[in-house]
Amino acid sequence: MNLILIGPPGAGKGTQAKQIESTHGIVQLSTGDMLRAAVKAGTEVGKRAELIMKKGELVPDEVVIGIISDRIDQPDCHHGFILDGFPRTLPQAAALDDMLRAKSKKLDVVIELKVDPKLLVERIVGRYTCAKCGEGYHDVFKKPEKSGVCDVCSSTEFARRPDDNAETMNTRLMAYYRDTSPLIGYYFCKGNLRTVDGMVAIDQVERAIEKHLVEARG
Ligand code: ADP
Ligand code: ADP
Ligand code: ZN
Image 1 (spheres, rainbow, N blue to C red):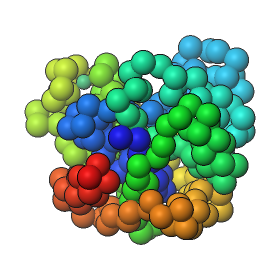
Image 2 (image 1 turned 90 degrees about the horizontal axis):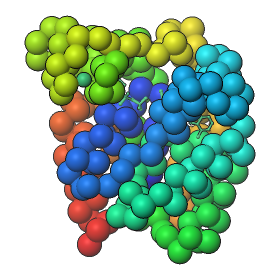
Image 3 (image 1 turned 90 degrees about the vertical axis):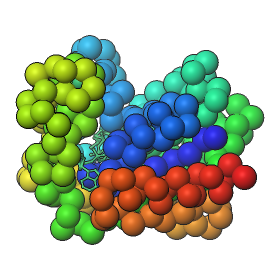
Image 4 (image 1 turned 135 degrees about the horizontal axis):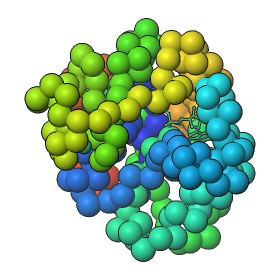
């Protein structure tokens, strides 16, 4: 099963992708995570993306299209994948259609996580992750069971993204509503859009998504 999670920054795409990954055995492909890894490793792509990401703007289409096309060819994607943060523009969506056709793959469902913009800032400024295993947390909504210790790997080191601040948030939201939100109409017209209320608790969102996945799998 191949699917897209679409929604504004902070909507819960990463959180839900991790869940789907473990229940369905398909891989999460997050262009944000891949770009952050490239920045950390100091690759050519990383050097090109670093400042753009810090400002909250979008990395050029050809960069992310290339990354995703290579990644989809990896053997762990054969059972299926969850696109998290890609496509983000209409040209990226068109490129995805072309690449899937060329690879004889198809998109089963597009899940939109709908969240009110005024909730997103709170989600973003409270977000942090385990520095060792990447598990996601939130200052208010998803605290580790034991304060300061990762539930998954027991690490005591955590990290916050440099772009997760109230100032950059505005640029990122603007980019979402300007460049990414037209994709909602695009996938609606193609017939595979399913919309989920992303403002309820994490496990309720999980259950709503699961219903659509079961339906899409047939
Ligand atoms: P969030 O989950 O908060 O929306 P991401 O981790 O998906 O953030 O993305 C972080 C940043 O990486 C974006 O603000 C953008 O600069 C860049 N980025 C990620 N995916 C894409 C993409 N598909 N196209 C262009 N830029 C991207
Ligand atoms: P995205 O990948 O769409 O940018 P994340 O999955 O990283 O979003 O979620 C952003 C922050 O909000 C994280 O700290 C996460 O723990 C928290 N979060 C995710 N979903 C919910 C939810 N349904 N209710 C409350 N907090 C949530
Ligand atoms: Zn951990």
